[in-house]
Length: 244
Image (cartoon, rainbow, N blue to C red; front, side, top):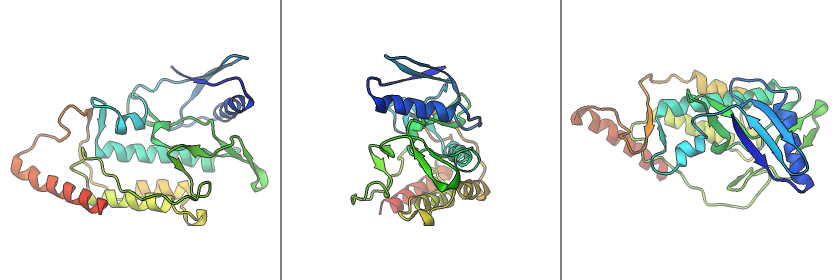
């Protein structure tokens, strides 16, 4: 099990706690973290979840030296699974749910590296008739706020993980294209989560072994210098293209 201790002492914290309880208590999906129990009194609000052995996706991607390294195929699989969890919330829940705080730290990984969408403290319920019930004063986390909420202009940066030196260019471009669609300022131009799952799942992919290991270990499979040199250069060339 793992627990989440929420703040206390004012109405906003209690409101966030009740929002998460109301949402998670009725959800059963393979790619959504399961709420096992909760405790609430005047001093403490406590949520108890199923234990996710491999922590969050954010920790794996941006953690300190020695953290797990996720290979490309595993990252692609995690993207599909996270999309399936969000698809369930958007299209199959009653009422429908918009998470409003999707980020790598809120994608948890179990012992099999299966993705689970977590942390519904900022959930927004879509009720019948198109009306919405806001469960939080702010939609999103510091670091990223949806354009509809915050219109300040920010510098755009392209980021590539230097540890990924062998990435199929077509697959990376496909994911980049989907990400750009999902980040359109006009909500009408964004794909639904059903469409995102379809685009991710139906793309013809190369099937090759993948691995996850400590970043202190070699991130490339053993191969001869000649055969590996060109593939490595292709990956580096692609990352340079992204940074232009």
